[in-house]
Image (cartoon, rainbow, N blue to C red; front, side):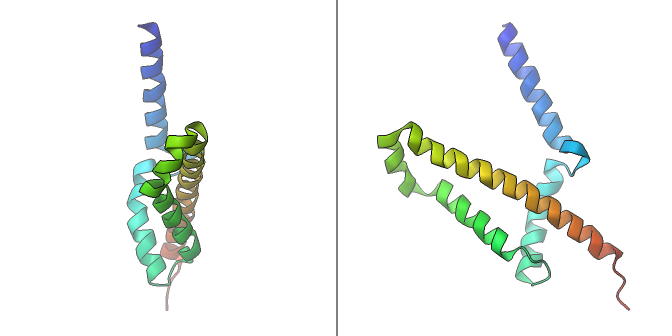
Length: 114
């Protein structure tokens, strides 16, 4: 029972930290809401995130691809490890890129066009 309470408290603290934003940065909900705007600005050529978005899309496709299921059936831990590494890289990339985009967006608000 005590272990369950400790786990619950740990997950609650993690959820609060993600929603509030780590180290004073944007919250997770703000970052997720920025993704469609980031994609739109990139396709319009306003934001320079094209290559990074393409790499994130490729990583997402790799993780979701059913072709990768076969090696996991035979290699077990090794087959799952490559997906875990890719998910960790993807999460870090999304966090970094959304923060970069939000900074870019704030800078655009400060630019006055004559």
